[in-house]
Length: 458
Image (cartoon, rainbow, N blue to C red; front, side):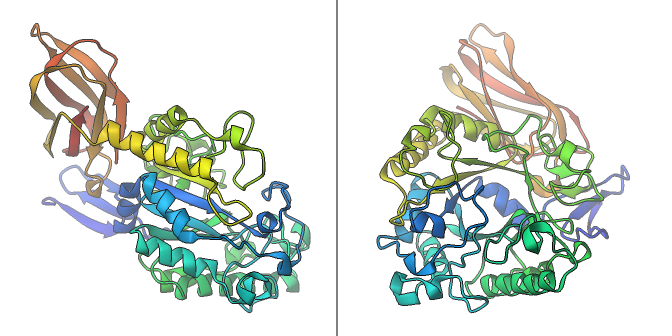
């Protein structure tokens, strides 16, 4: 890193380092090491399971957030977190997230914070701890664990849109009690189960200035290497703005300063594309339910919705339009009332993992390095289907425009790709019937000398 210095930004989002170039006077953000790990993870699975599914109440829990169920009826006798994580592994995922407590407010770990959780369940005589089982399975199969919890909705506490009394209790004594409970939930989850890749607050988390719980210092104390999602004080990654499995292109990892949440008015216009001149590193997360087709959009299991299972073609397209557009893909997988990934869902995820291996495990040429021009020979003239580009993002997103060309068998150079953002990864199809003997990448515009981690053709 000669000629530059790395400093930590002085804004509220203290996790955003910047690189300052003495030669140009430009300072721009770069990721933290945990953010680089997250972007390298590429594919995650979020497993949705809650008491409403366990007791066979099949209203969509995202909408049915006011009902408190009898906890003694919770008894998923076949529940097997090993089966969940083996499925995630087969799908090509490198991390997994579990809904420790969803909108019902039912705590799926051992806790005495209030009497609505596994201690009150029939399952394992009140001694079960799914969070512990989940984390243990993740480490067993070399999957990074993450946890989801909702402080936005909690039926037991009559909380909606972050505030008690169904959204009307801001500033009340009861709100202070709920905030304290939320802080203790975060403390239990962050201190009892080892290192976590991330903690996911659905719909974000209110800050103390907004009369919300002060959870960020607790998270930073117990999970210094974890990712926080999200609040106005810190968002290590951002929601892409849709649940359809795609990011827009271009999709920059950087966002404007002054606000750090997808719910802020300053960030909303940039969720899909990012801000190439932004000062906050917060790459896009593309989340989509696996059962998201044919009129179905379900994060939780409901009987008779197998028709909603995404096709293999749709899943591979999701991958190319999320990971291949500088984002991370996380698929929502249902757990049925017995406590298992349904067999049809499991098989589709296995097919997805196999398809990615088939498409991307056998490159026919690659090159990497520093500079504006890259070229390599192919062993024999061959038709090409895709190219993959990656920047070394420890130096930030430097490339602003590029062109890919191939040398045909008759000696002509043909343009086979162009674009702007590369970032962590850019995947693009090659629409040509020509056979090529050489390929070249030309960086046409950049903020500084580009570092290309990989230029690969398939």
